[in-house]
Image (tube, one colour):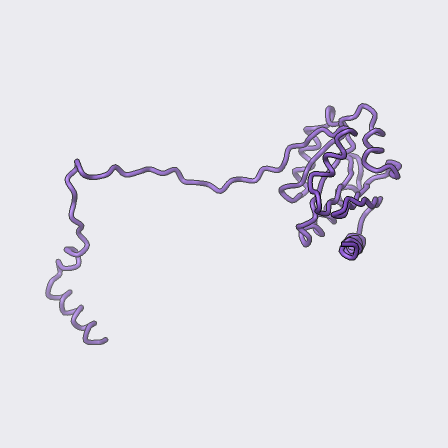
Length: 191
């Protein structure tokens, strides 16, 4: 090994032009050279969150059927609900450990009157990228309330826990991770 190394050093000292000759590539005549291609730099696609959509009572069944065979949490909230944002933070923190559970946000505020403000608040909530976002499009909010949960009386925050079979469980108020874990265990026991 040292002999090869010494031989290379001797060649380099004796023939200083040798490495340069090795590096020089033969040039093709200009008419045979291919033009240099300028490829655009590709950027990874930026995941845009789904747009806020109006939700009518008649569309609730379709909204809930978007993930057949998978569990879903539907968080019902409002701009003027002080506990709603804290509840969303808790659910998002829990959902990061359980990515198979889909999160859907439903604002009871009027879509027509509040869409820009709702979009602004949703943007601050650190929601998973594929979280569905809806707002009340009914002139009479009680129509949407009844379509979402017949046992709900309007208190916020309201969370619908929906298992893979479509069985709904409604919870009002701030949820603890224990409630979500218990729901997940019960759901696993039934499947």
